[in-house]
Image 1 (tube, one colour):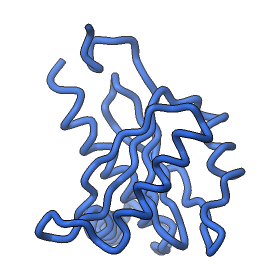
Image 2 (cartoon, helix red, strand yellow):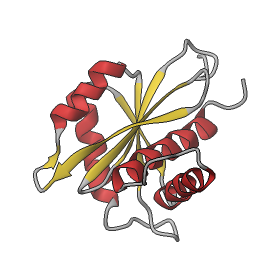
Image 3 (spheres, one colour):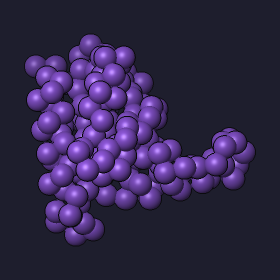
Length: 152
């Protein structure tokens, strides 16, 4: 059976689950890079599934990656079960394979990257929470690439 890196190129979408916003990033198994797409609004009724499905139609991914928020010690956090439920519903609604990735510190790393880009002049507009969420989804996807696509 071929490994993901030796198989045909695949588009992958990553999701940074949150109760207010869900950051989304896209990448492919050839370049193994991720780019932020959007932050999908979420609320008491859950994510805006029509927005998630619009992104899935546009990008036609072969796989979805969802970040799992753990505590520092690796135990489940208050958000872990909600993220698992989102991942399960994403798989049900979209018929995609969904894999889970440890997302510890991804939002902190994303905020740091965006702040550095702003300070260096690479980023002109101010950083908003939706930007951090989409950048965190990039980090989640980069972690998946590192863990699951190996060296070519």
